[in-house]
Amino acid sequence: GQQVMQIPQYQHVQEGEDFTTYCNSSTTLSNIQWYKQRPGGHPVFLIQLVKSGEVKKQKRLTFQFGEAKKNSSLHITATQTTDVGTYFCAGSSDSWGKLQFGAGTQVVVTP
Amino acid sequence: SAVISQKPSRDICQRGTSLTIQCQVDSQVTMMFWYRQQPGQSLTLIATANQGSEATYESGFVIDKFPISRPNLTFSTLTVSNMSPEDSSIYLCRVLGPGGGNTEAFFGQGTRLTVV
Image (cartoon, rainbow over all chains, first blue to last red; front, side):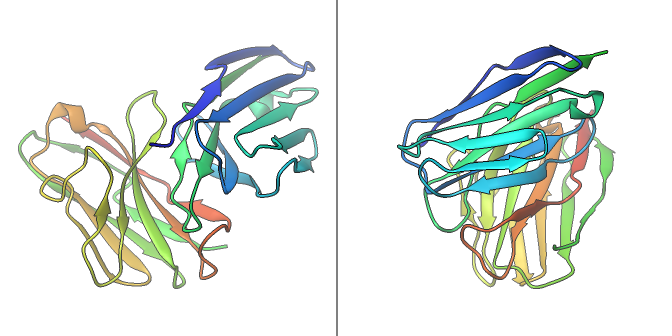
């Protein structure tokens, strides 16, 4: 079955630095979504990528979907303390929204 | 965006008992899903709640343990039956809007279950 792998599992970042988390699927995806979960909270939808090679930006966050639609990345520039949380990628191979979640990248920001 | 009310937000239950979790949406949605998030882990899909018919369960999850109802397009319940400490997790419902398919999705706030 479809598997979605995400690295790194943990990311310690100095405030102001950049970092990237990567997501890889064992199968071609129809779309990939990214979520952020704050400690004690529920996953909050960030973005969805659908097209091969797609790049989307949200302020300091840049999301990419690979040409083969099997991998994706989230790059955060100038990390702030508000970026603390766990970032999940989630891929879907069908058109009905059933998602397979990656293990998540837990981000800790030190001032 | 859809507003999702999930109840209870947390509970502590005795082993061997059952707990029913409710997910209420303020608008009709196409798809409703139930996920489990074990401590420190990612989200695992339990089942897709189908309106008016039996839920579709993922591998490793069975109806006897996790019965699901979805009587209409705005409401679903998940029951965790005959609980054991291994069932201690956060349970989340997720919904897709009327557009279905590849559209933005929303999670409820989750139910944090502790089984003692």
